[in-house]
Image 1 (tube, helix red, strand yellow):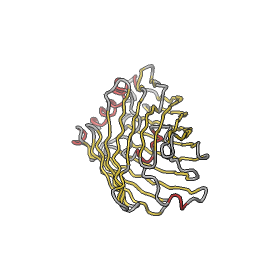
Image 2 (cartoon, one colour):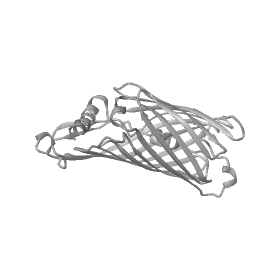
Image 3 (cartoon, helix red, strand yellow):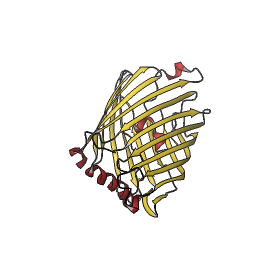
Image 4 (cartoon, helix red, strand yellow):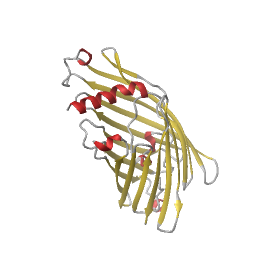
Length: 305
């Protein structure tokens, strides 16, 4: 318990120095609106929804757990809305809870017959809660209270895409905020900058290969990045791998159960010092598409991002 307590305390208070990190996902490619409000499907009439659950650093008490419910809603050929709810929890001796609810508005413009550009704005509310009274250190004057705060979130982004290519740049929140307990700053958010890029190669009629990358810069912290390679076989089975800089190697697996329903799984193999105390991270995802305008024939070969 002592190791777990100091581990969680270090995570909370180091965030003041290096900026609190937003929840991270290994299968971010299927809900890029979490990092870029300009992300769109670009397929009028096709409503996409999903559920994702991530359990990080298995084997460590109080390690992060994240749940994400999301939906992408087309309002026509030019306008799309995305809705995201994220619940992120960390802590054993002292529990920290973050709840994010965001709505994204994206407008699509045509640059050519094949190339499109969307602009996006994000607006939402972030809830931060720290439960110190429920801990075993409540006798410490620094931890004899709870804190609960709400903060506004405003983000923006741009997303360039075609049928087999995408690139985007964004910041999910332009309003950094602090959270305090008994006058002591316990968390500090900073501006996050994201860049994403991917290309889909048609290797054959039955095989598609998609290399991709996401680069993240948190103001005041070093740049980090993910590099991924996914293969789609027969428009049904997906296998891939990803490398997160100095953190993990990820195995990815997905399967299209029906034309409208997909399931995905990711396992992170830790490369940092946490590999000595953690059994890795698990992530599972369900995706479901609703053909609102009954354009099924148009989507027999859905976009691979």
